[in-house]
Structure formats: C-alpha cells, structure tokens
Image 1: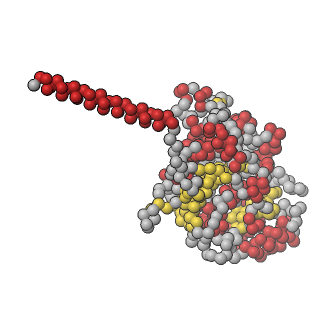
Image 2: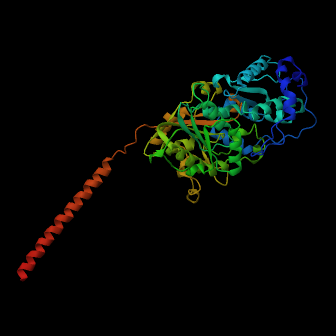
Length: 486
C-alpha cells in the first residue's frame, strides 16, 4: 500500500494532504457499535501488521435457519457464506450539486484507470450520472485504521465534511433510486437516520440544473441522538429543501394544509428498523448475537410503519419498503400483509425495480414460501399458523406466515413476489438488502357485495315483514275482543 500511495496516479491527492490532516472535521459520536476487527483478504504483496484477533465469523443457528428458508440457491450457498465473512467494500456517492463535483469525478476516473492499484475505485454502472463509486479491494474499517491509508482517509473525510461526497454502502443507495423522483414532489422518509438515504434524496432533488429546488423532503427519526445525527448529515449539503422531524413513524400524524385538506405525499421511503443481518460484512460482531427470534419481535413494528406510510401516500404515489435483513419474516411477510389491506380506502400493488438496478446487482425475487421459528426453540419451525400450538398463537401473529397454497392470498403473492428483490453479498459484491416498491391505486376500492350478504338482508326484511303482519293481525283480534266485551 505504501507504494500505491506514492504512485503518480494519486498525485491529485497531494494538494489536499496537508490541509486535510491539519483540519479534519470532528467525527460525530457513533450510533452503531463497530467490531474491533474486520477480516479482509490482504491485497497482493501486503502482509498484516502484527497479530490480529479475529471475531468468530460463524453461527450455527444462522446457517441452519437461512438454509431452511432457501434464501439462496443451494449451489451458491458456500459463496454466500464466504462473502459474508469478508470485509464490506468501501463505496461513495459524489454530490453532483457540489462545486467540486466535476474535478472530483475527474480524479476518481484517473484513479480507476490503474486497475492494479488497491486504491483504484470502480464506477458503479447502475448508478445514474456516474456518481457512484466503490473500492473493491478496500473496506471502511481498513481505511479508518490503517496508517498506510491515512492520506486517503483524510481526503475522503475532507470531501465528506464539505458535502462533496458521501461514504455509503453501495446497495444502500438502491432505495432512493426506486422512488422515481419528479419535479415539485413532496417526499417523506419515515426512518431517516443516520441520513445517508435522506441526503441522497436531497441531492437527487437538485440534479436538474434548471431549478434550484425540485421538491421538499420531510426526514423523520424517533430517537433523539439519531435525529441529531440525521440533522448534521443533511445540513452539510447546504440545501433548504428538507425538514427534520422527531416522531414515531408508526403514528406519524396527518398534516392539514391551509385549505383544510390533508397533506398526502407523492413519494414515501420506509427503510424500517430491522435485525440487520445483511450488514454482517460491516458489523461482524452480529455473528455472535444473531438469533432468528429478533425478526418475530420486529415484524409488527415494521408492518405498522409500512401501513402508516401507505396511508399517507397519495393515490398513484410510490412507496419504497426496504430492510438490511435477509429474514422473510421482516421482508416478504410484511409486504404480503400490507398488500392484503386497504390503505385509506385504496388498494396497493407492487411494481418492478428499475431494470438497471435489478440487473446490475443480480437481485433474487421474493420467496414463494417460508417458515416461522418457535419463539423459544429455534430448531422447531412451522409452515402454517394451523400447526402452531394453542398456547403460542398469541405470540406468533398470523401475518408472519406464508399464504396457504391455492388460496386467494397465494395467487396474489405469486403475481407480486417477482417484483421484490433480495440482494445477496456474493452477487452484488456488497451487503445484503431487501427492496419492494408499492404503487397506490388512483381510484378507491369498492367493496363487492357478496350474494350471502344479500340473502341475509333479504331474509331479515322478510322476517320483519312477517313480524309486522303478525303484530297487525294480533292487534285486529284484540280490537274485536274489546268490542264484544263492550
């Protein structure tokens, strides 16, 4: 690496080095705990410095559970596990609205021309305008800790502190790209912290040079410290097209406009809290504490956030649901439950992801079926709610389970699941992610009246008519008796 740093291809870093090392921006307090070590395969000609304690990169429950769920083809299983046991490649997104964007893209292109160098980034072909880049041979932990990479670290920190560049996992850039942003739209990010996706949306609002602002984003976060981090992240962009709120996304309030109408959003992003096992490459400490039971506890919260977002969505609007989890209880089960429900009197459906994103990252379609683990014994799993013992039915919601074969729900899910995408690390050369894009119908749903309901109503009317007739005859008889008595 030391020879790479002196290579002429990164001479563009020289003017920044002294300034960056002396005036590096202060780093905010970390919200997510980091691992003490991240195993990364050494590049050619490099040896690790000193002994390094490696965390355990295995979990028998994880392997048994996901092998049974069949989230990955069997012939790709070993490649899937191998990818999870390596460090996450560093990636960054250039802010097209920054005054340094043109020069920065030129510098990155110059570096990428030297493919033999570990410092050479690769342009992400699926990211618009050539703004997404990834270092396939470097991970974020190594950039932060290696003394040999301190110049690169200083350069990246300086650019990020000034809003010219954002360091973000490549697959995490996908959800904002699925929103299909248009001019003048009002957007809502329900779970916005730490702010990488919110800042990406704000940057996308300024991609068109014709106008200073193409819309407005309401970025929401419940936890106070994370809301502060979110504010710091988006403020560095210098844009006035956002508002930060601190509310529970499950109960995000309705907003009344000046004319008394309810404000509905053109686009909603629901990147919900999840178990996070798709981030194992970035946070290997999760290997030790992973359990499939986390998904059971999170499922209902994810569902209520998603349904609240759909309630706040305009007819014809688009909502993107995403998690950094492989678990179908947090992914397919939540999406299916939302599809079966009316939202403000409107039905919703799924639409495909942008073709460039889906093909560029090699995503897999949603699962047709899955199993639900026992809340206390992870070795026991059930396929349907009918198999669950009576004493556990309160702990396992019916929405956790896959639809029964040949049912109306199964027919609907078979049509919709091909539009979901699960991104696996060995295919995307990144982390794990799940994305589904909802579209809200433009016309409200009309509940059909079933023949049984009509029959019941008719029989009720007949009973009433009969009772009135009987009452009338009784009354006439009573009147006759009274006349005779008189």
